[in-house]
Length: 460
Image (tube, rainbow, N blue to C red; front, side, top):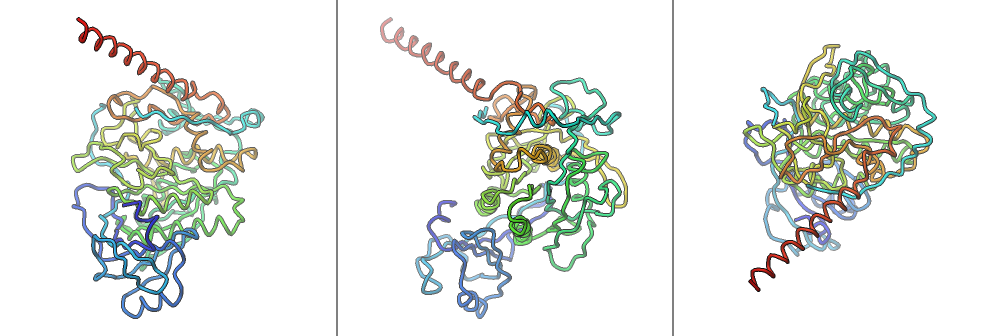
C-alpha cells in the first residue's frame, strides 16, 4: 500500500490514537485524512469544504500534506482515476486501525538476527576533552545499566559535562509538568494540538517520559531542553491528525531556527502497520530531525510480537527501541524483530509525575526516552552538530553493548543494548561489520558442508 503514495495524488485514511493497551478492540475512526503529494490549491480545498467537513491543512514537507476531514463517500479499496479537480491524477481511499500510546504495562513479568552494518562519524577526540560527571547513589537502575558494559550494577551514573545542553527534545505525548523543579527551568510548553484541553499534563505519561530523557535526578541528558507537544488528552487519546500536527510543529520550529538546533522527537505511540505514519516519520527525519519510537508492548496477552507489524515501530527512518529487564533479558512484553534497532531497560523504570511525585513504570514507552537521552548526549558535542539523523542513529548503534541480551534467539532482533558513555563512542564493543562477517563465514561453511552432503548422497 505504501507504493501507492508514490503514484497517487493523495490517500484518504482514518486513524485514532489511544492508549497502548490491548484490552480495547481496534476500531475505525470517523475522521479521515487526505494525503497530498503536492500542496493542494486553495481552490481545491474550497471545493472540498463546500461538500465535506474539512480541517486545517497539515504540512510536513513539500511532498507530504495532510487534510483532515469527514469524507465518508470516498472510502473504498480501489484506485480511483477520477480526479477531484483538474490537476489531480487520482487517489486511493481507505481506513486504518486504531492507534495507541505506548503506555505503562500492568502486572508482573517473567524473565524470559537481524544484523546491520553501521558506522560512527561522531567526534571521539572532542569528547575526550569534556569533563565527566558522576552521579552517585543513582535512584534509577536503568541509568546505572546503560552506563556500563555488563552486570552487576555499581549504583552510579557518569555522563559528559555538556549533558545534552543546546539540544531540543520534543515530547509528543500528553504534555509535561514544566514547573516541576526536576526540570530546572529547561522544560517549556511548545504547543497543544488536541482540541478542548488545557496546557497541562493531566495524564502523567508525558512528564514521566520527559523525566527519563532529561530530569536532574532520573534523566540521561540532564541539561537538554524539553518541549511539551500535547497531542493526546488525559486518557491518552488523540486523533492521528493531532499527532501529525505535533510533528508539523517540530518541523516548523526546526526550520524557524534555520535548521541549526539539534532536535529530537520522542514518539511513544503505536498501531498496527500503517504506511501513513511511517511516511510521516520519514518526512520529518529527512528534514534533519531524529525521531525515536517505541517498539511496542506486545499483543492482547501481553507477550511481545514482531515490531514490523506495528507502526511507527516499523518506520525504517526512526530509531526503534525495545525493552529489557534487570537481568538483561528481553522483557516479555517487548516487541522484537528486524524492525527493532536497539534495546534499553524498560521494566520498573522510575521517573517523575506532575506535582512532584515519583513512580515506577514498565513498557517500551520508557525504554525509548533513555535512547533519546543518549542521542542528546551525542548531539550536545559541538563537533557533532552537523551530523544527520542517520549518522546519529549509526553512532548510537555503533556505541551499543553487543551480545549481552538473553532470550533473543529466533527473534531476528539485534543484540544491542543502549550504552550512554558517549565519550567512548569509537569503542562500540566490536564493529557490527565484524559480527556480520563472522555470520556470513558460518553461512559459507554451512553451504560447503551442505554441498559435500549432497555429493555423498548422489555418489554414495
